[in-house]
Image (cartoon, rainbow, N blue to C red; front, top):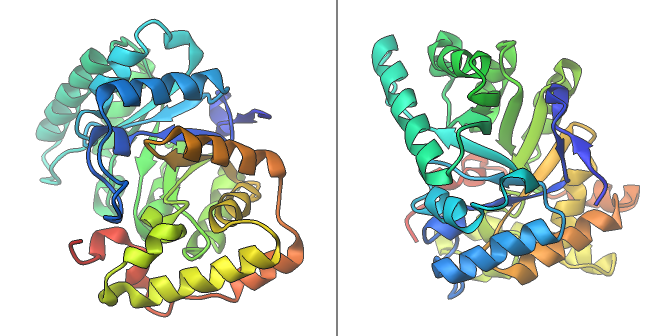
Length: 309
């Protein structure tokens, strides 16, 4: 794969990155193939990713056993990949409490991942209030200046939080949801990030499985997503490709995007995504057809608001 630069950090990554939430816990639309794999299967996937040239591996303290699985499997291959993890904390506004929580989280991550230095650390699900307060990013910035962290930033939900992160000059990397149905970042977030040199790492490219065959398992409350998925699948078919390929090629074509996460426990899905990245951008007619498919209720674009499945 052709490498890309992670914004102003200068870190070289590949356009396809491996997301590890599915390695640490059960995740996704219940469809029979969403269960957490064994540690042996997870280790095999991690090594396969590095063998295939993947440079960025993304994880989080909140992803169950994921950090420990990565640390154990890749203990001898630290120099072969760029590691990004995330830290969470209670939004109580107490600077000392935030500092203690982040310090404890970083210490645990370093121990589990078997690394003294973490390449990228993001605030997990950072809110507008937390980002405007600036204390949490300030703590991460202290660790960056001490050499414990290479780059810092935030993982956000929604436009307001993403823009709040971009308001802070200390933010190097921003992880956002962006996909065929959730194109909201195109208006303001992506242009601002590009102008500021802030790297964009995209998650939810397949919208937790909506943009795959798993859409058939969506409950009736999410029927508009199922119908939109069917429309997009038809557009993909007209171009002679599958829906997941349409999804990855669409987001990777945006010049502000440094990498797109493949959250999977299956080597086949990883290999497919690598092939999609190699295929290059979609034609203009196909992109126009994609943009004609819309979801009226924006709440459906945010998986945390979905009913339990």
